[in-house]
Image (cartoon, rainbow, N blue to C red):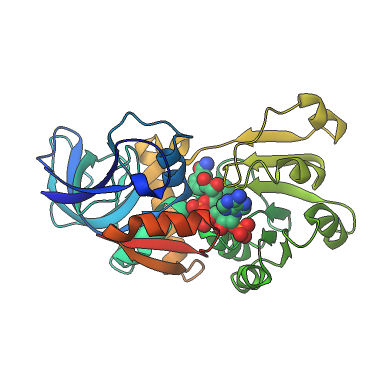
Length: 324
Ligand code: NDP
């Protein structure tokens, strides 16, 4: 049996429910993993509220780290006793143990703790694809990155610094801006007290940026287009403030042949070999010291509703880790 968080209906943090569930044995292509730590991500909120629908009842949580207990037929990259970590579907990581598909579960190097892995798998793999697999971001280019003091944000600041990319962040308080700069943002704009488009233009001598990475969504999308140079690239990857309304393609032409994409991590992880390569790349960055997991808060599994509330209330910085 394993203590597991499920939802039976969509709604506020109060719908998160702690239950005991049978874990069972892994079938072909599956593993059973005992979790030492799980991660909290904004996608968990979208699933809880129904923005990203699940068939209910459903367990929640998309990332965790722990020890492999058993492997099913055909699984060759993991064995019982291995340390492992993942960002993967289906949701179910908020639990003591689970059975799940093996393809997206990655061997975890000794030098990275379970807590650190739970803090970086989903958010760090996101940064990996944002900087290397969507569009060729080059040394010397300038990126505008929204919510730069968040979980994905602080890792993005560090990653950009390690690649010689100028990352101009935005964040909701001066304290968060200072944290983003400490982590590698070259500048950070408080977008609650300032007009981020005007500030960005001033910081770039009127030129704008080559690329925008926007996980905030509704509140920042239009302004972000105004921050791009002609031929610039907009990567929209989240909806923390709500989903982006339909886009008028002519607005992209008028601003100078802009490009827009809406990405999701799980497209990049769907291929087993690519997923494992992305994880090795992330682990190398951590082991080299270029990227350092920033765990802002820790909660126990039974405190999960409070963790969700804090994330939605913009109270967190960096990553939040849940101990089962
Ligand atoms: P964060 O830790 O960044 O938390 C979200 C942050 O968004 C808040 O702290 C807040 O920072 C900012 N924000 C702005 N407006 C709002 C609002 N109205 N309500 C709540 N927060 C707001 O979360 P994550 O690191 O988990 O994720 C960041 C974004 O990236 C999310 O949108 C997430 O869904 C997305 N994501 C997308 C992936 C993909 O592949 N598509 C993968 C991983 C994450 P501030 O106070 O500074 O404004």
